[in-house]
Image (tube, rainbow, N blue to C red; front, top):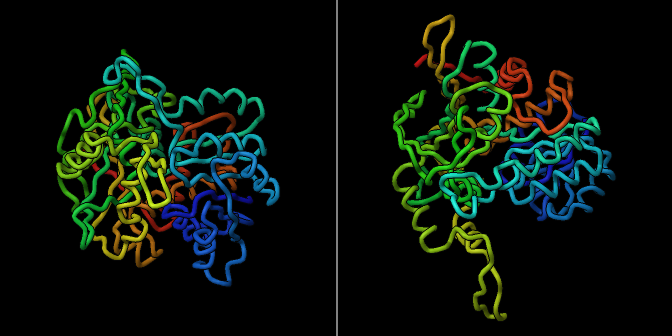
Length: 406
């Protein structure tokens, strides 16, 4: 397997560090708009690792990405950029006859008249619209294959296959007790993506109603997370699992709730109130004359890069899937989860917990594709594949998952 990794930020760099310990691939080309960042990711692996090389590429330039895939004879494109670049990379992979993997899907667009009641264009709709083309070509696009979405979807498949006869509700629940020394506000993941997820209308699925939307931060609940994290208030946010799980798993209701905390929620509401969550450029004066900038990009530029915060970060992060239903005629409720301690991920890989937890999952998926344990055609989510091989391999990577009866 020859892989083109596009994006050498925190998650992309963690991908290289995890993949370097595995023998399943022949080469990995690490490409980024900032060549120095790609080169730094490769150099950090040491002189003895010869399977990696750095290139510069603009993720928005489909022709350049296609050419890069062909020049290095890459048969897989792993997208480690933010969701703005999903579609050009998705199309470039198809043009080069390469398998495609991403960790976040194509962006949504709210319903123009009833944004908090009805869906407009949903996450991933633009990719699923091309599913027939991929299937006809015998090609695979594995979408939403990070931790959330990704591992959380694998948990849903595992629950349906091995733990339940009927499922009432699947609820992805994400929480942490992470703190960052020296910062009052320092998101542990891309603020650009966090704003997108948290301020867009959340989507809920119900089998008798289909997909519908609610107000941001709706249906607050306190969820008790394992391994010492404890109770965290969680609220509905927009996330891919709600759009993916019902396509392959029978459940009467599917939700995604994020443990944000009151202070984080109030900060996001303030950004929205001031229009600083907008992506459309505004014109501002500068020493060189008027320039057009995106308010959200300004917010991101004013905050520390999450990938650089590991040394100051304390605590654990938990991703998991809560499932309620019946087994052998009796009620059952479980929480399948994966916890990463920042102290461990920094000591073992030099990557902070949130980006490491995101990065390990596509690497596991790549290995399953390389060995043939996973295979398929079309545009598929993680639920379309058997869960057990994935969970066994994740444990073999030294990062076991857990299950708690509720």
